[in-house]
Structures are given as C-alpha cells and as structure tokens.
Amino acid sequence: MSDITSQLAQRVAVLLAASIRTVMLYPLAHPAVGQPLQELTGILEEMLQERREIHLGVVEGTFFLESRPIVAPTPAVAGLAERLSKKKIEALTIYPGVTRDDLFSLSSLLARRDITCEQFPDELDKRGIWSIRLGIDQEVHDEQADDTEGTASRTYFQALNAVRDTMREVENGRIPTGEWINAVVDNMVSVTMKDPTTLLGLAMIKDYDNYTFSHSVNVGILALSFGSFLGLDQESLRDLNTAGLLHDIGKTTVDKAILNNPGKLSASEFEQMKKHAEAGAEIVAQMKDISPQVADAVLGHHIKFNRTGYPEWASARSFSHFAELVAVADCYDAITTLRTYNVPTLPKAAMDIMHRLAGSALNAELVEQFEKMMGEYPVGTLVRLDSNEIALVVKPHPMESVPPAVKVIMDARGELLPQPRLVSLAPVGGTRYASIVSPVDALLKNIDVASYLLA
Image (tube, rainbow, N blue to C red; front, side):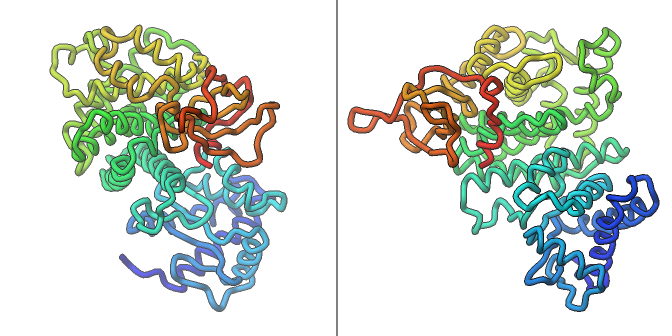
C-alpha cells in the first residue's frame, strides 16, 4: 500500500476547502464547484483502490489525512482545520463508492453554520450518504471494538456501502470483484456466530430513499440469521449471506422508470422486472471469488416453491436450499416495508401472511422454522407492556430471554424517555418486570424504530 505524501494530503485539504467556500454560492454544475469536487473525487477513488476506508480530520488544530498531518498549512487548509474544530468534528471516514454528489453534500453541510456535530450523522442519512461517516469507524473485527451495539451498527453501514458500491460498479458497466463484499460478509458472519441475534434487529431499518440497497442488506441479515438458527456451517453462512446481499443486483439492469414506478406495473413492465433474477445471476457468476452457489440462489429467489415463479425456463431446474432461504428472507422484508403501493405490515402480522404463502410461494417447513427464530414478537416490534409502557423488542422471545430483551422507550404516561432502559421480561423468583400486552404500530406513535435499534 503506497504512502500518502504531504503534497497529496495538502491537495485533498485544499480541494475540500475550496468546495466548502463555493457550494453556498454556486450549483454543482458550476465549474467553480464541479472542478475541485471532480478532482477530489478522483484522488479519493484512487486512494480507496488500496484501502477499505480513508480517515481525515483535525488533531489539536492540525488537519490530517490518514497518518499524514499538515504541519505547515496554507491559509485555506488552516481555515478548514478551524472550521472542523469549531464544529467539533474530529474525524470523518470515507468509504469506497464515494461520489462527487456525496462530496458536494458534505461540503454543503460543512459550510452551513447551523449544522452541529450532533446533527451531522442524521443530515448525512437524510441525504442517503453512506460513503461518509462521522468519526473514525473501526473495523468490525478490531479486537478493541467490543461494544455489541456499536459493532452491529458499523457492520450494517459497511454492508450498505459495499452493496451500494457493488451495484454502482455494475451500473457503470463494470463487473465488480467480490473483494469488498467478501470482507463485509466475513465481518457479518463473525458477529453472527458470536451472537445470532446481534444483527437481526437492524433488518428492521428501512431506508425508503435507498430501498434497493437497504432491502438487500436486510435480506442478507435475515438470511444469515436464519441460516445460523438452522445450524449451517460457517462456509455455508458466508455463501447464504452473500446471496442475500446480492439477490437484487440484477435490478441494476432494469430501467429506472420501471424500478421506481410507484404504482402497479403494466404487463410489459413486469416482464422487464422479471429479468432481474436472471441478469443478477449472470453478473454474480462473473464476479471474482464468489461461490457458484450464490449465483444459483440469485437466479432462483423468485422461482417459488411450487415453481410458478420466474424465470420460467428454470422451473424444472433443481435449486439449492439457499434460494428458498433467501426467498423467505426477501418475502419477510418486503412485507414489513413501507412502499408507495404497499402499507407496511407489523412484524407479528407478517408471519400470518407468510403462512398463507407457505406451500405455494414459500417452503412451508422453512416458514415454520423462520417463525420459531423470530418468535411471537420479532425483533424490531414495538410493544405495549401491562405497565402501559412502550418498549422495543431487541432480542427474540423477549418473555423468555434472561438477558435484557426490550428497550423501554416511553413511560406509562406516554412520554418518551430521555434514555431508553434495557430490561428483561423473563420471570425472576416467580415475578417479572412486566408482560407484553400487544404490538404497537410505530407509525401511529411517530416512533423511529431505526434510531433506537442503532442507538
């Protein structure tokens, strides 16, 4: 891996400083903004060919890029360091897949005086920017990163970045390597093997502005957790997780107008959409270091248990059980996701719908096992306790889990708690803290489940 020179670090800082100065005056299309951002994007892309992430920020008033501080800054770089310091932004992490638009948004946020360090992560998320995160994001397998919730969150965002970057490579006419996806999968499998429930709750995070990426990560998490519940070995878990993450990669070949159609597709549009499974399998088959089983699962995830799905030409073909596992995960996430043409179903009710699909679209035995894994109140379900408090389920089978399994987020008077409380609902000495009365619709309560799952 090549070293970062002082000149390169200085150039990155100068370009970022120039972008911050001009974004409030001109649109992205203006050369004063577009040219420095284009050069900055090119430099970062080249650096990220050798690194999984880049760190930049300020230490004691000095700007740094990776391990290279700028000890004799120009006025522009000194101004950048002062701006970051005033906002109390000590560091930013940049991932592969960062675009000129991402950097334009970053520059705009840094230019605004009203955006604080505390607001920065939410502002990035609102803009659908996953390639830039606040702080120095440690690798999930870093032995120092032993906080379970922090590890899960980092893993989720790494997966989101990897899926987005991989799909954009395909959209740009290139077949991506499996290197980054494989690295993320290694982390996800490692986390899941330590505790199969760690990532499960994050599958309830729904990013409607980036549905394809978010849905792919959620299906990857659900499939991985399901495989772990069924006792699959580590290598099988890797392939199953990869298949979940890449199951919709073929949608990169579908016309965006069809993909983003808010209404019901016409017959011809649906025929085009149906081609994504076959196209995805062809793409995955060409990706370096990806198992053939992954391509097989991508091809068959819409074939249906009774073989009435698509692609029709593959209906008589024998598929591995991975395709059926991904189909179950795909169905569950789709049912529980809000779309313009689909009202989201509460996790508990989603299982009832899946039971109606069992034996036709889905493998009935797998649906039964999936329900056992998720429990009566699946992770991510908002529930009312008999104490009249509102809580979020964070571990399966909350009434049986001795470790804390719910986060109490609203008191008996209906007021949000400043800090959620983790509690166990399992009986201790013949008594329990509380019992679950019923599920609660998070939309009606105006509660952002994702924020509590990531907290």
